[in-house]
Length: 134
Image (cartoon, rainbow, N blue to C red; front, side):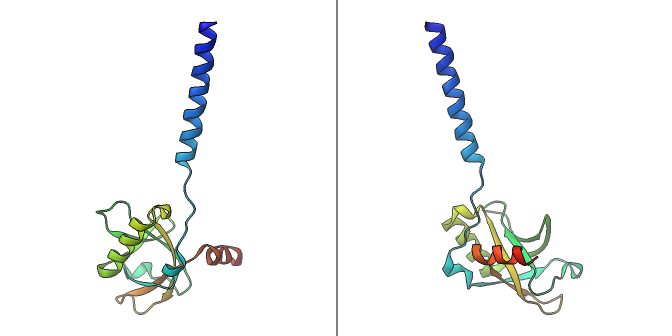
């Protein structure tokens, strides 16, 4: 009886650990607070070949607290957020850990490749609409 109880207890323990690990691994959905959707952020292209048109969906990403704020198209870093805009995004990520340091944005204004461009955060409903339109 003692050996059976130990095996059963070990089995339950393993199941609990696996269940807990699966819950921790799942990524939170990208959720942008409504008041942050209307904010525009100034970004700077890293190279002229990376310039994208208005309406392009991008992701703002910050790997860690001390790293720079990158603007990505799929897996490629194409721009950077600097100055006050970067500080605002860092604060947004600190205040909203569910974002997982990723912010979906859309390009709203583009000038010359040497000039900054502007992006705006996309809400969940907007992102679903953009995905359906593609």
